[in-house]
Amino acid sequence: MTQAGNIPQRRPLARIGAFVAERRGLVRDYLSAISGAGGRLVFSLAYFIALANTLSIAEFGMFATASAAGVMLSRILGFGFISALYRTATIRPNLIGTFTAGFLLLGVISLPLLAAASYGVYLIFFASTVPLSVFAAIVFAEALLWRPVEVALIVNNGLGKFGRAALLTILATALRALGAVLFMFAAQPTIGVWSWYYIGANAASLLIAFGFFYPRQRLRLRLELYLRRLADSIYVAGAEVLFYLQMEFDKLLVLAIGGPHLAGIYAIIMRLVDLTAIPIRTFSMMLVQRMMRAPELLSRLSVKSGIEGGVFLVSTLALAALAIVLHFFPNALGKNVAEAAPLVALAICVPGLRNLVEYQAELLFARGQTLVRAINLALLAGLKAVLLTYVLTTILDMPELVLSLNVVFLLLYLASTLLTYSAMRKPAKPV
Image (tube, rainbow, N blue to C red; front, side, top):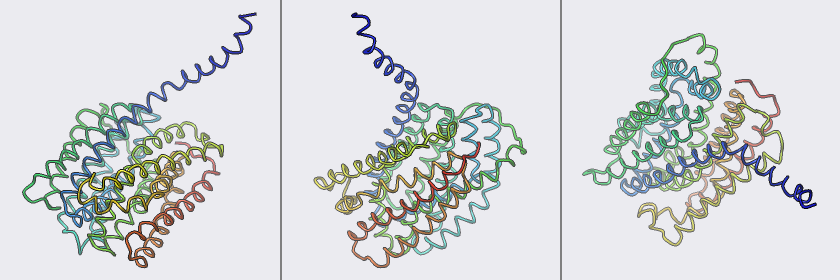
């Protein structure tokens, strides 16, 4: 009787044990990946504090905006062939050397287009505020030094080597933070001097990434493989440029309409918002990998709504905690950040809504719907431009402007949700 009575109790425990055992590898991978995000968060905060309080607010606004433009322009490098390299690392790792050679070839070919696009962006947004030499140095650091570091991270994550990717993330971010700390002691702490420190920190990261972390495979050129994937890669490149345009367009508009000082205050607020996205991106990256192998993963409404609710809650709580700290200790992040500290709480919903738009864009990439993703991001970029231009030209009071961003990002999220989940009704494309 005793043995028979214990059977119903043991079965649930056995199921729980089996559930945990089956997912032990997934949990281990996530903890490895999130450790990199945690390290990046710590060093990103140190980097932000050092830089934001060394440069003047106006120069910090110019750098943050030029850096955002550089990140956007860096997606032109290789015509988006990084996406093919990532898929290869995830599904066919024996071809990494072949696709790395393709990325290098297309990267060289894309340089004239990258230079022309960079000069066009400079003329439109930066000609009256940032020296061309400084803008060129920042774009060089983002596109030709930091973007290849991201390639090494992407390949390691694709291979499932989350621990190595986490270590590289921590080292690369620490080098940026070290550059900012050294810059604090510069004789002339100007944006021009900082651009050289920035190049040095990113160059050191590049040497470490490819010297110690990139997989060792022989480089082989196979043009027929690249041509078959070039159209999809160009869609991805276009989508990535549009994605970062709609993510960073607010900084460009604030600089163009409000000037460098307002751009600096705005950049400080949005940089604090950006920090909340670091752990969310780790989760999105691992979900994208699983969806590449199982596109039906989000077929149930309860799963989709649960994930989105979690993303919004974590992002909002992160900014709320930061706002509380800055309310009681406004100088906690330095004297320049203190000027923007009272405004942080007014953007309470922005991180969650912004991170959700980014998350939804990744879902379409995971399903191979790259053309639809590019179209959606173009529509969102246009909508954001209209909404922000209206806000920046009609609202002059800074607290009201920051508060209105909650409405702007809510409208963007609703538009993104409609576009994304309408597209996901169609079958996923094979990768």
